[in-house]
Length: 103
Image (cartoon, rainbow, N blue to C red; front, side, top):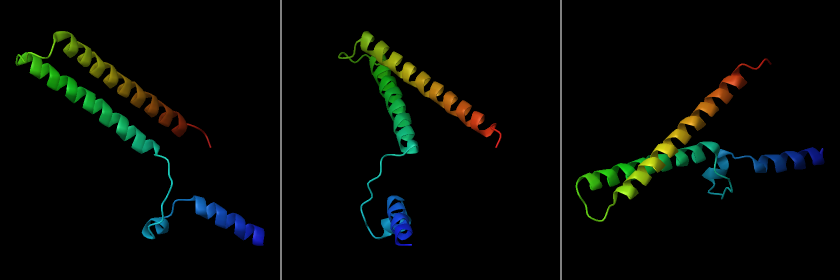
């Protein structure tokens, strides 16, 4: 019986319970998939905004921005957006495949 209690205590200690957060105990937790996905989306957004701002600055005639920089950043923006779209498509396809599995 003691081995079961020891096992359950060790198992419960590994789980993330709200009580641990309320007691201000530090929780060593790796970033979740959702957090990583949000960071990737934010990075794609940041690249697109930067490319757009740089293109606007070039159109306004700022002297320290060259056409090649603008074109390279616009391509980076396009490629990062296409990567995000392909990732989303793969994620949706995997979800649909899991939902279609027979139990």
